[in-house]
Image (cartoon, rainbow, N blue to C red; front, top):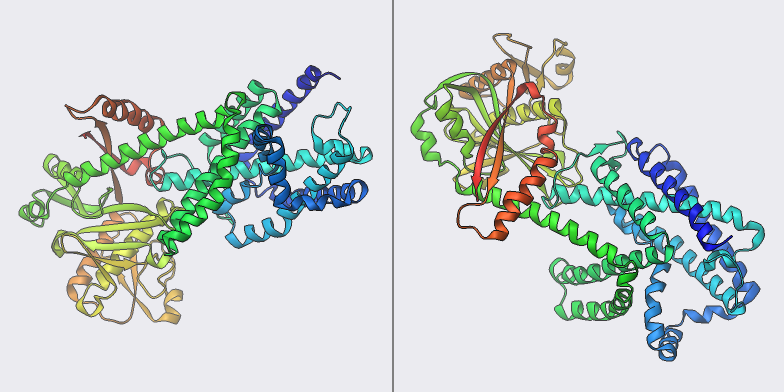
Length: 588
Protein backbone atom coordinates (compact mmCIF):
# COMPACT_ATOMS: atom_id res chain seq x y z
CA UNK A 1 0.00 0.00 0.00
CA UNK A 2 1.47 3.36 -1.03
CA UNK A 3 2.03 6.34 1.17
CA UNK A 4 -0.91 8.23 -0.37
CA UNK A 5 -3.23 5.29 0.17
CA UNK A 6 -2.15 5.22 3.80
CA UNK A 7 -3.23 8.86 4.17
CA UNK A 8 -6.67 8.14 2.73
CA UNK A 9 -7.21 5.71 5.60
CA UNK A 10 -5.28 7.34 8.44
CA UNK A 11 -6.69 10.88 8.22
CA UNK A 12 -10.42 9.96 8.27
CA UNK A 13 -9.86 7.44 11.08
CA UNK A 14 -7.94 10.02 13.11
CA UNK A 15 -10.70 12.60 12.57
CA UNK A 16 -13.40 10.12 13.63
CA UNK A 17 -11.48 9.30 16.82
CA UNK A 18 -11.03 13.01 17.59
CA UNK A 19 -14.73 13.83 17.11
CA UNK A 20 -15.73 10.85 19.24
CA UNK A 21 -13.29 11.84 21.99
CA UNK A 22 -14.42 15.48 22.21
CA UNK A 23 -18.10 14.52 21.96
CA UNK A 24 -17.78 12.42 25.11
CA UNK A 25 -16.28 15.20 27.22
CA UNK A 26 -19.59 16.56 28.54
CA UNK A 27 -20.34 13.21 30.16
CA UNK A 28 -17.26 13.59 32.38
CA UNK A 29 -14.19 11.42 32.68
CA UNK A 30 -15.46 9.71 35.83
CA UNK A 31 -17.71 7.42 33.75
CA UNK A 32 -14.79 5.86 31.87
CA UNK A 33 -11.96 7.03 34.09
CA UNK A 34 -11.63 3.61 35.68
CA UNK A 35 -10.26 2.37 32.32
CA UNK A 36 -7.52 5.01 32.05
CA UNK A 37 -5.12 3.60 34.60
CA UNK A 38 -5.28 -0.01 33.27
CA UNK A 39 -4.79 1.20 29.69
CA UNK A 40 -1.77 3.38 30.55
CA UNK A 41 -0.20 0.75 32.79
CA UNK A 42 -0.71 -1.92 30.10
CA UNK A 43 0.89 0.37 27.51
CA UNK A 44 3.87 1.19 29.71
CA UNK A 45 4.44 -2.46 30.62
CA UNK A 46 4.08 -3.41 26.97
CA UNK A 47 6.72 -0.87 25.94
CA UNK A 48 9.02 -2.01 28.73
CA UNK A 49 8.64 -5.69 27.87
CA UNK A 50 9.31 -5.09 24.16
CA UNK A 51 12.28 -2.91 25.05
CA UNK A 52 13.79 -5.55 27.35
CA UNK A 53 13.24 -8.22 24.68
CA UNK A 54 15.02 -6.15 22.01
CA UNK A 55 17.89 -5.29 24.35
CA UNK A 56 18.71 -8.90 25.18
CA UNK A 57 17.93 -10.22 21.71
CA UNK A 58 19.77 -7.71 19.56
CA UNK A 59 22.34 -5.71 21.55
CA UNK A 60 22.79 -6.17 25.33
CA UNK A 61 25.51 -3.50 25.39
CA UNK A 62 23.14 -0.71 24.36
CA UNK A 63 22.83 0.37 28.02
CA UNK A 64 26.15 2.21 27.55
CA UNK A 65 24.25 4.80 25.52
CA UNK A 66 22.90 6.20 28.79
CA UNK A 67 26.26 7.89 29.29
CA UNK A 68 26.28 11.61 28.28
CA UNK A 69 29.65 10.93 26.66
CA UNK A 70 27.98 9.36 23.66
CA UNK A 71 25.77 12.41 23.21
CA UNK A 72 28.88 14.58 23.09
CA UNK A 73 30.54 12.13 20.71
CA UNK A 74 27.45 12.10 18.47
CA UNK A 75 27.28 15.89 18.23
CA UNK A 76 31.03 16.16 17.64
CA UNK A 77 30.90 13.68 14.78
CA UNK A 78 27.71 14.84 13.07
CA UNK A 79 28.01 18.56 13.93
CA UNK A 80 25.27 20.53 12.13
CA UNK A 81 23.34 17.44 11.07
CA UNK A 82 23.29 16.09 14.61
CA UNK A 83 22.22 19.46 15.97
CA UNK A 84 19.30 19.61 13.53
CA UNK A 85 18.22 16.10 14.50
CA UNK A 86 17.69 17.21 18.10
CA UNK A 87 14.31 18.63 17.11
CA UNK A 88 13.14 15.11 16.24
CA UNK A 89 14.47 13.68 19.48
CA UNK A 90 11.94 15.85 21.33
CA UNK A 91 9.23 13.45 20.19
CA UNK A 92 10.66 10.95 22.68
CA UNK A 93 9.33 13.03 25.59
CA UNK A 94 6.30 14.62 23.93
CA UNK A 95 3.24 13.60 25.90
CA UNK A 96 4.92 12.91 29.21
CA UNK A 97 4.69 16.60 30.11
CA UNK A 98 0.89 16.24 30.13
CA UNK A 99 1.24 14.75 33.60
CA UNK A 100 2.39 18.10 34.96
CA UNK A 101 -0.49 19.93 33.27
CA UNK A 102 -2.83 17.84 35.46
CA UNK A 103 -1.48 19.33 38.68
CA UNK A 104 -4.92 20.89 39.13
CA UNK A 105 -6.37 17.39 39.55
CA UNK A 106 -3.64 15.33 41.23
CA UNK A 107 -1.16 15.95 44.00
CA UNK A 108 2.51 16.65 43.39
CA UNK A 109 3.54 13.48 45.23
CA UNK A 110 1.39 11.21 43.07
CA UNK A 111 2.80 12.70 39.87
CA UNK A 112 6.38 12.41 41.17
CA UNK A 113 5.89 8.75 42.07
CA UNK A 114 4.18 7.90 38.78
CA UNK A 115 6.81 9.66 36.67
CA UNK A 116 9.85 8.41 38.57
CA UNK A 117 8.81 4.82 39.18
CA UNK A 118 6.75 4.05 36.07
CA UNK A 119 6.84 6.51 33.19
CA UNK A 120 10.54 7.35 33.06
CA UNK A 121 11.87 3.74 33.35
CA UNK A 122 9.37 2.58 30.70
CA UNK A 123 10.46 5.29 28.26
CA UNK A 124 14.13 4.49 28.83
CA UNK A 125 13.63 0.75 28.25
CA UNK A 126 11.46 1.34 25.18
CA UNK A 127 13.95 3.63 23.43
CA UNK A 128 16.92 1.48 24.43
CA UNK A 129 15.15 -1.46 22.83
CA UNK A 130 14.57 0.48 19.62
CA UNK A 131 18.21 1.53 19.59
CA UNK A 132 19.28 -2.10 20.07
CA UNK A 133 17.10 -3.20 17.16
CA UNK A 134 18.24 -0.41 14.85
CA UNK A 135 21.89 -1.08 15.66
CA UNK A 136 21.50 -4.45 13.86
CA UNK A 137 19.12 -3.24 11.12
CA UNK A 138 20.62 -0.20 9.46
CA UNK A 139 18.75 -0.73 6.18
CA UNK A 140 15.07 -1.42 6.86
CA UNK A 141 12.90 -2.33 3.89
CA UNK A 142 9.41 -2.03 5.33
CA UNK A 143 6.30 0.01 4.74
CA UNK A 144 6.17 0.79 8.46
CA UNK A 145 7.44 4.33 8.94
CA UNK A 146 7.70 4.42 12.74
CA UNK A 147 10.74 2.84 14.32
CA UNK A 148 8.86 1.52 17.31
CA UNK A 149 6.52 -0.70 15.32
CA UNK A 150 9.39 -1.97 13.20
CA UNK A 151 11.07 -3.20 16.38
CA UNK A 152 7.90 -4.92 17.63
CA UNK A 153 7.79 -8.67 16.90
CA UNK A 154 5.42 -9.27 13.99
CA UNK A 155 3.19 -11.73 15.90
CA UNK A 156 2.09 -9.11 18.43
CA UNK A 157 2.27 -6.05 16.19
CA UNK A 158 -1.49 -5.57 15.74
CA UNK A 159 -2.40 -6.04 19.44
CA UNK A 160 0.32 -3.53 20.34
CA UNK A 161 -1.14 -1.10 17.78
CA UNK A 162 -4.57 -1.43 19.43
CA UNK A 163 -3.12 -0.73 22.87
CA UNK A 164 -1.20 2.23 21.43
CA UNK A 165 -4.40 3.75 20.01
CA UNK A 166 -6.13 3.42 23.38
CA UNK A 167 -3.09 4.94 25.13
CA UNK A 168 -3.13 7.83 22.62
CA UNK A 169 -6.79 8.48 23.45
CA UNK A 170 -5.99 8.49 27.19
CA UNK A 171 -3.03 10.81 26.57
CA UNK A 172 -5.27 13.15 24.58
CA UNK A 173 -7.76 13.07 27.43
CA UNK A 174 -5.00 14.13 29.81
CA UNK A 175 -4.20 17.10 27.57
CA UNK A 176 -7.88 18.08 27.35
CA UNK A 177 -8.37 17.76 31.11
CA UNK A 178 -5.22 19.76 31.77
CA UNK A 179 -6.43 22.47 29.38
CA UNK A 180 -9.75 22.73 31.21
CA UNK A 181 -7.92 23.06 34.52
CA UNK A 182 -5.54 25.76 33.28
CA UNK A 183 -8.34 27.78 31.62
CA UNK A 184 -10.42 27.61 34.82
CA UNK A 185 -7.52 28.86 36.93
CA UNK A 186 -6.65 31.65 34.46
CA UNK A 187 -10.29 32.74 34.37
CA UNK A 188 -10.46 32.78 38.18
CA UNK A 189 -7.37 35.00 38.30
CA UNK A 190 -8.80 37.43 35.73
CA UNK A 191 -6.33 36.47 32.99
CA UNK A 192 -8.84 34.84 30.62
CA UNK A 193 -12.43 35.68 29.62
CA UNK A 194 -15.15 34.04 31.66
CA UNK A 195 -16.34 30.68 30.31
CA UNK A 196 -19.00 28.21 31.37
CA UNK A 197 -17.54 25.65 33.77
CA UNK A 198 -19.55 22.47 34.28
CA UNK A 199 -18.64 20.13 37.14
CA UNK A 200 -19.27 16.68 35.73
CA UNK A 201 -18.86 14.80 39.00
CA UNK A 202 -20.52 15.47 42.33
CA UNK A 203 -17.93 13.38 44.18
CA UNK A 204 -14.64 14.22 42.45
CA UNK A 205 -13.98 17.95 42.60
CA UNK A 206 -11.38 18.35 39.84
CA UNK A 207 -13.42 16.93 36.97
CA UNK A 208 -14.78 19.85 34.95
CA UNK A 209 -16.00 20.49 31.42
CA UNK A 210 -15.78 23.78 29.51
CA UNK A 211 -17.94 23.66 26.34
CA UNK A 212 -16.34 26.62 24.56
CA UNK A 213 -12.80 25.33 25.04
CA UNK A 214 -13.80 21.76 24.20
CA UNK A 215 -15.24 22.58 20.77
CA UNK A 216 -12.48 25.07 20.01
CA UNK A 217 -9.87 22.38 20.71
CA UNK A 218 -11.76 19.93 18.51
CA UNK A 219 -11.83 22.33 15.57
CA UNK A 220 -8.15 23.14 15.97
CA UNK A 221 -7.21 19.44 16.16
CA UNK A 222 -9.25 18.62 13.06
CA UNK A 223 -7.73 21.56 11.20
CA UNK A 224 -4.18 20.45 12.04
CA UNK A 225 -4.92 16.80 11.21
CA UNK A 226 -6.53 17.56 7.86
CA UNK A 227 -4.12 20.36 6.99
CA UNK A 228 -0.88 18.51 7.75
CA UNK A 229 -1.83 14.88 7.04
CA UNK A 230 1.68 14.00 8.11
CA UNK A 231 2.98 12.94 11.50
CA UNK A 232 6.36 14.52 10.77
CA UNK A 233 5.00 18.06 10.64
CA UNK A 234 2.73 17.38 13.60
CA UNK A 235 5.79 16.15 15.46
CA UNK A 236 7.66 19.36 14.64
CA UNK A 237 4.77 21.42 16.01
CA UNK A 238 4.51 19.31 19.17
CA UNK A 239 8.28 19.34 19.68
CA UNK A 240 8.55 23.12 19.59
CA UNK A 241 5.58 23.47 21.95
CA UNK A 242 7.05 21.03 24.46
CA UNK A 243 10.55 22.50 24.52
CA UNK A 244 9.12 26.03 24.80
CA UNK A 245 7.11 24.96 27.84
CA UNK A 246 10.24 23.45 29.38
CA UNK A 247 12.30 26.57 28.70
CA UNK A 248 9.66 28.86 30.19
CA UNK A 249 9.29 26.54 33.19
CA UNK A 250 13.04 26.67 33.81
CA UNK A 251 13.00 30.48 33.73
CA UNK A 252 10.07 30.63 36.12
CA UNK A 253 11.69 28.07 38.38
CA UNK A 254 14.65 30.38 38.85
CA UNK A 255 12.22 33.00 40.17
CA UNK A 256 10.69 30.45 42.53
CA UNK A 257 14.16 29.67 43.91
CA UNK A 258 14.75 33.33 44.77
CA UNK A 259 11.28 34.63 45.67
CA UNK A 260 9.59 31.59 47.23
CA UNK A 261 12.42 29.43 48.54
CA UNK A 262 14.52 32.49 49.50
CA UNK A 263 17.71 30.94 48.17
CA UNK A 264 20.66 32.88 46.77
CA UNK A 265 20.59 34.45 43.33
CA UNK A 266 23.78 32.58 42.51
CA UNK A 267 21.97 29.25 42.92
CA UNK A 268 19.17 30.43 40.62
CA UNK A 269 21.71 31.54 37.99
CA UNK A 270 23.47 28.17 38.17
CA UNK A 271 20.14 26.38 37.82
CA UNK A 272 19.01 28.35 34.79
CA UNK A 273 22.46 28.18 33.19
CA UNK A 274 22.73 24.38 33.50
CA UNK A 275 19.20 23.38 32.48
CA UNK A 276 18.56 26.40 30.29
CA UNK A 277 21.62 25.79 28.12
CA UNK A 278 20.50 22.22 27.39
CA UNK A 279 16.94 23.29 26.62
CA UNK A 280 18.15 26.22 24.51
CA UNK A 281 20.09 23.74 22.36
CA UNK A 282 16.92 21.75 21.68
CA UNK A 283 14.88 24.92 21.25
CA UNK A 284 17.20 26.30 18.58
CA UNK A 285 17.06 22.97 16.73
CA UNK A 286 13.25 23.05 16.79
CA UNK A 287 13.15 26.56 15.34
CA UNK A 288 14.84 25.22 12.20
CA UNK A 289 11.61 23.31 11.49
CA UNK A 290 9.55 26.51 11.72
CA UNK A 291 8.21 26.31 8.17
CA UNK A 292 7.66 22.56 8.44
CA UNK A 293 4.86 22.73 11.00
CA UNK A 294 6.54 24.35 13.98
CA UNK A 295 4.79 27.64 13.22
CA UNK A 296 1.45 26.30 14.46
CA UNK A 297 2.09 26.47 18.24
CA UNK A 298 3.70 29.90 17.87
CA UNK A 299 0.67 31.24 15.97
CA UNK A 300 -1.82 29.76 18.43
CA UNK A 301 0.11 31.00 21.46
CA UNK A 302 0.27 34.47 19.93
CA UNK A 303 -3.51 34.51 19.42
CA UNK A 304 -4.21 33.34 22.97
CA UNK A 305 -1.68 35.84 24.31
CA UNK A 306 -3.55 38.69 22.62
CA UNK A 307 -6.90 37.48 24.00
CA UNK A 308 -5.51 37.16 27.53
CA UNK A 309 -3.76 40.54 27.38
CA UNK A 310 -6.85 42.37 26.08
CA UNK A 311 -9.09 40.81 28.72
CA UNK A 312 -6.68 41.43 31.59
CA UNK A 313 -6.01 45.02 30.48
CA UNK A 314 -9.72 45.81 30.14
CA UNK A 315 -10.55 44.19 33.49
CA UNK A 316 -7.77 46.18 35.18
CA UNK A 317 -8.96 49.47 33.68
CA UNK A 318 -12.53 48.73 34.74
CA UNK A 319 -11.44 48.11 38.32
CA UNK A 320 -9.34 51.29 38.34
CA UNK A 321 -12.38 53.27 37.16
CA UNK A 322 -14.50 51.77 39.96
CA UNK A 323 -11.88 52.70 42.55
CA UNK A 324 -11.50 56.26 41.29
CA UNK A 325 -15.25 56.90 41.10
CA UNK A 326 -16.44 55.27 44.30
CA UNK A 327 -18.71 57.31 46.57
CA UNK A 328 -17.28 58.70 49.80
CA UNK A 329 -18.70 57.71 53.17
CA UNK A 330 -19.31 61.39 53.94
CA UNK A 331 -21.85 61.59 51.13
CA UNK A 332 -23.66 58.61 52.60
CA UNK A 333 -23.70 60.08 56.11
CA UNK A 334 -25.17 63.33 54.78
CA UNK A 335 -28.25 61.45 53.55
CA UNK A 336 -29.21 60.16 57.00
CA UNK A 337 -30.37 56.66 58.04
CA UNK A 338 -33.22 56.65 55.49
CA UNK A 339 -30.79 57.63 52.67
CA UNK A 340 -33.31 60.28 51.63
CA UNK A 341 -35.67 57.64 50.21
CA UNK A 342 -38.26 55.15 51.40
CA UNK A 343 -36.78 51.92 52.83
CA UNK A 344 -38.96 48.92 51.96
CA UNK A 345 -38.66 45.43 53.37
CA UNK A 346 -36.22 43.11 51.66
CA UNK A 347 -32.50 42.62 51.11
CA UNK A 348 -30.78 44.44 48.27
CA UNK A 349 -27.63 42.59 47.23
CA UNK A 350 -25.34 44.85 45.19
CA UNK A 351 -22.55 43.05 43.39
CA UNK A 352 -19.33 45.07 43.21
CA UNK A 353 -15.63 44.53 42.59
CA UNK A 354 -14.65 46.99 45.33
CA UNK A 355 -13.48 45.70 48.70
CA UNK A 356 -13.83 49.15 50.29
CA UNK A 357 -15.87 52.27 49.70
CA UNK A 358 -19.30 52.59 48.09
CA UNK A 359 -19.64 51.74 44.38
CA UNK A 360 -20.88 54.41 42.01
CA UNK A 361 -23.81 52.22 41.01
CA UNK A 362 -25.33 52.69 44.47
CA UNK A 363 -25.49 56.46 44.02
CA UNK A 364 -27.46 55.93 40.80
CA UNK A 365 -30.13 54.06 42.73
CA UNK A 366 -30.34 56.50 45.61
CA UNK A 367 -30.58 59.55 43.34
CA UNK A 368 -32.96 58.08 40.73
CA UNK A 369 -35.23 55.65 42.61
CA UNK A 370 -37.84 56.69 45.20
CA UNK A 371 -37.36 53.58 47.36
CA UNK A 372 -34.73 51.04 48.25
CA UNK A 373 -34.40 47.92 50.37
CA UNK A 374 -34.41 47.88 54.14
CA UNK A 375 -31.13 45.95 54.26
CA UNK A 376 -28.36 46.60 51.72
CA UNK A 377 -25.39 44.28 51.26
CA UNK A 378 -22.39 45.16 49.09
CA UNK A 379 -21.20 41.75 47.92
CA UNK A 380 -17.69 41.35 46.53
CA UNK A 381 -16.66 37.90 45.24
CA UNK A 382 -12.88 37.60 45.04
CA UNK A 383 -10.75 34.83 43.58
CA UNK A 384 -7.53 34.65 45.56
CA UNK A 385 -4.30 33.09 44.19
CA UNK A 386 -4.48 29.97 46.38
CA UNK A 387 -6.05 26.61 45.49
CA UNK A 388 -8.63 26.55 48.29
CA UNK A 389 -10.03 28.86 50.95
CA UNK A 390 -11.13 27.12 54.11
CA UNK A 391 -14.89 27.32 54.73
CA UNK A 392 -14.20 28.81 58.15
CA UNK A 393 -12.49 31.79 56.45
CA UNK A 394 -14.86 32.17 53.50
CA UNK A 395 -16.46 35.52 54.33
CA UNK A 396 -15.28 38.92 55.51
CA UNK A 397 -18.24 40.85 56.89
CA UNK A 398 -18.30 44.49 57.94
CA UNK A 399 -20.57 47.45 58.40
CA UNK A 400 -20.78 50.49 56.11
CA UNK A 401 -21.76 53.54 58.11
CA UNK A 402 -23.57 53.56 61.48
CA UNK A 403 -25.70 50.64 62.67
CA UNK A 404 -29.05 52.31 61.94
CA UNK A 405 -28.19 52.56 58.21
CA UNK A 406 -28.38 48.74 57.85
CA UNK A 407 -25.62 48.73 55.25
CA UNK A 408 -23.21 45.78 55.21
CA UNK A 409 -20.22 44.71 53.20
CA UNK A 410 -19.52 41.04 52.56
CA UNK A 411 -16.42 39.74 50.77
CA UNK A 412 -16.66 36.12 49.67
CA UNK A 413 -13.25 34.60 49.01
CA UNK A 414 -12.74 31.61 46.72
CA UNK A 415 -9.59 29.83 45.63
CA UNK A 416 -9.05 29.13 41.95
CA UNK A 417 -9.95 25.48 42.56
CA UNK A 418 -12.99 26.16 44.76
CA UNK A 419 -16.54 25.63 43.54
CA UNK A 420 -18.74 28.69 43.95
CA UNK A 421 -22.07 27.94 45.59
CA UNK A 422 -25.43 28.04 43.88
CA UNK A 423 -28.07 30.66 44.59
CA UNK A 424 -29.80 29.01 47.56
CA UNK A 425 -26.59 28.11 49.39
CA UNK A 426 -25.12 31.55 48.74
CA UNK A 427 -28.19 33.31 50.12
CA UNK A 428 -28.22 31.18 53.25
CA UNK A 429 -24.50 31.60 53.89
CA UNK A 430 -24.70 35.37 53.35
CA UNK A 431 -27.59 35.83 55.76
CA UNK A 432 -25.93 33.58 58.34
CA UNK A 433 -22.61 35.42 58.05
CA UNK A 434 -24.29 38.81 58.51
CA UNK A 435 -26.31 37.52 61.46
CA UNK A 436 -23.19 36.07 63.07
CA UNK A 437 -21.41 39.39 62.54
CA UNK A 438 -24.27 41.25 64.26
CA UNK A 439 -24.22 38.82 67.17
CA UNK A 440 -20.48 39.03 67.74
CA UNK A 441 -20.04 42.74 67.06
CA UNK A 442 -19.97 43.81 70.69
CA UNK A 443 -16.71 44.76 72.43
CA UNK A 444 -16.59 41.39 74.16
CA UNK A 445 -16.48 39.62 70.83
CA UNK A 446 -14.36 42.05 68.84
CA UNK A 447 -11.67 39.49 68.07
CA UNK A 448 -10.23 38.17 64.84
CA UNK A 449 -11.01 41.33 62.92
CA UNK A 450 -9.06 42.80 60.06
CA UNK A 451 -8.69 46.52 59.52
CA UNK A 452 -9.67 47.77 56.10
CA UNK A 453 -9.29 51.27 54.72
CA UNK A 454 -11.79 53.95 55.73
CA UNK A 455 -11.82 52.50 59.26
CA UNK A 456 -14.09 49.62 58.26
CA UNK A 457 -13.80 46.58 60.49
CA UNK A 458 -14.06 43.31 58.62
CA UNK A 459 -14.74 40.17 60.66
CA UNK A 460 -13.81 36.73 59.42
CA UNK A 461 -16.95 34.57 59.35
CA UNK A 462 -17.19 31.01 58.09
CA UNK A 463 -19.97 29.34 56.15
CA UNK A 464 -23.02 28.02 57.98
CA UNK A 465 -21.79 24.44 57.62
CA UNK A 466 -18.34 25.22 59.06
CA UNK A 467 -19.51 27.39 61.98
CA UNK A 468 -21.22 24.76 64.15
CA UNK A 469 -21.61 27.03 67.17
CA UNK A 470 -22.81 30.02 65.21
CA UNK A 471 -26.22 31.26 64.12
CA UNK A 472 -28.31 29.00 61.89
CA UNK A 473 -31.10 29.95 59.51
CA UNK A 474 -34.26 27.82 59.42
CA UNK A 475 -36.57 28.68 56.52
CA UNK A 476 -39.07 25.81 56.62
CA UNK A 477 -41.83 24.72 58.96
CA UNK A 478 -39.83 21.80 60.36
CA UNK A 479 -39.39 21.09 64.02
CA UNK A 480 -36.40 22.94 65.35
CA UNK A 481 -36.73 21.28 68.73
CA UNK A 482 -34.73 18.31 67.49
CA UNK A 483 -31.89 20.62 66.58
CA UNK A 484 -32.05 22.39 69.89
CA UNK A 485 -32.15 19.30 72.04
CA UNK A 486 -28.45 18.64 72.29
CA UNK A 487 -26.90 22.06 71.97
CA UNK A 488 -29.32 24.10 74.12
CA UNK A 489 -30.38 26.54 71.41
CA UNK A 490 -33.23 29.01 71.51
CA UNK A 491 -35.12 30.76 68.72
CA UNK A 492 -35.71 34.35 67.81
CA UNK A 493 -38.99 34.16 65.90
CA UNK A 494 -40.01 36.63 63.27
CA UNK A 495 -43.17 38.47 64.31
CA UNK A 496 -44.77 38.21 60.86
CA UNK A 497 -44.80 35.68 58.09
CA UNK A 498 -44.71 37.37 54.69
CA UNK A 499 -43.51 34.74 52.22
CA UNK A 500 -41.83 32.03 54.19
CA UNK A 501 -40.98 31.71 57.82
CA UNK A 502 -37.37 32.60 58.65
CA UNK A 503 -35.91 31.85 62.06
CA UNK A 504 -32.46 32.43 63.51
CA UNK A 505 -31.26 29.70 65.84
CA UNK A 506 -28.59 31.20 68.08
CA UNK A 507 -26.52 29.82 70.96
CA UNK A 508 -27.97 30.23 74.43
CA UNK A 509 -24.93 32.18 75.58
CA UNK A 510 -23.58 34.79 75.29
CA UNK A 511 -26.52 37.12 75.71
CA UNK A 512 -27.47 39.43 72.84
CA UNK A 513 -28.09 43.08 73.60
CA UNK A 514 -31.30 44.86 72.68
CA UNK A 515 -29.91 46.68 69.63
CA UNK A 516 -28.43 43.50 68.15
CA UNK A 517 -31.70 41.63 68.79
CA UNK A 518 -33.67 44.33 66.98
CA UNK A 519 -31.21 44.28 64.11
CA UNK A 520 -31.56 40.50 63.82
CA UNK A 521 -35.35 40.85 63.72
CA UNK A 522 -35.10 43.35 60.89
CA UNK A 523 -32.74 41.04 59.05
CA UNK A 524 -35.26 38.19 59.42
CA UNK A 525 -38.08 40.40 58.15
CA UNK A 526 -35.96 41.43 55.18
CA UNK A 527 -35.07 37.80 54.41
CA UNK A 528 -38.73 36.81 54.49
CA UNK A 529 -39.62 39.65 52.12
CA UNK A 530 -37.07 38.37 49.61
CA UNK A 531 -33.67 39.16 48.20
CA UNK A 532 -32.99 41.19 45.05
CA UNK A 533 -29.70 40.89 43.15
CA UNK A 534 -28.48 44.15 41.66
CA UNK A 535 -25.83 43.93 38.96
CA UNK A 536 -23.88 46.61 37.16
CA UNK A 537 -23.73 46.24 33.38
CA UNK A 538 -20.75 48.25 32.21
CA UNK A 539 -19.96 49.51 28.74
CA UNK A 540 -16.33 50.53 28.44
CA UNK A 541 -15.08 53.14 26.02
CA UNK A 542 -11.67 54.72 25.67
CA UNK A 543 -11.79 58.33 26.72
CA UNK A 544 -11.03 61.15 24.33
CA UNK A 545 -7.37 61.69 23.63
CA UNK A 546 -6.45 58.02 24.04
CA UNK A 547 -3.97 56.40 21.69
CA UNK A 548 -5.13 54.36 18.70
CA UNK A 549 -3.87 51.15 20.32
CA UNK A 550 -5.90 51.77 23.46
CA UNK A 551 -9.02 52.53 21.43
CA UNK A 552 -8.65 49.30 19.49
CA UNK A 553 -8.05 47.26 22.65
CA UNK A 554 -10.93 48.78 24.68
CA UNK A 555 -13.55 49.72 22.07
CA UNK A 556 -13.11 46.67 19.84
CA UNK A 557 -11.17 43.91 21.58
CA UNK A 558 -12.48 44.04 25.14
CA UNK A 559 -16.01 44.95 24.06
CA UNK A 560 -16.08 41.95 21.69
CA UNK A 561 -14.87 39.58 24.42
CA UNK A 562 -17.32 40.98 26.97
CA UNK A 563 -20.30 40.57 24.66
CA UNK A 564 -19.41 37.08 23.45
CA UNK A 565 -18.21 35.42 26.64
CA UNK A 566 -20.05 34.49 29.81
CA UNK A 567 -21.33 36.63 32.64
CA UNK A 568 -19.64 36.24 36.05
CA UNK A 569 -20.24 32.89 37.75
CA UNK A 570 -22.18 34.74 40.43
CA UNK A 571 -24.56 36.12 37.78
CA UNK A 572 -25.16 32.68 36.29
CA UNK A 573 -26.30 31.21 39.62
CA UNK A 574 -28.95 33.77 40.54
CA UNK A 575 -32.60 33.74 39.39
CA UNK A 576 -33.41 36.15 36.60
CA UNK A 577 -36.72 37.10 38.24
CA UNK A 578 -34.79 38.60 41.18
CA UNK A 579 -32.10 40.32 39.11
CA UNK A 580 -31.88 44.01 38.31
CA UNK A 581 -29.18 45.25 35.93
CA UNK A 582 -28.06 48.85 35.69
CA UNK A 583 -26.12 49.99 32.65
CA UNK A 584 -23.19 52.36 33.05
CA UNK A 585 -20.68 53.76 30.56
CA UNK A 586 -17.04 53.67 31.68
CA UNK A 587 -14.70 56.13 30.01
CA UNK A 588 -11.23 54.77 30.81
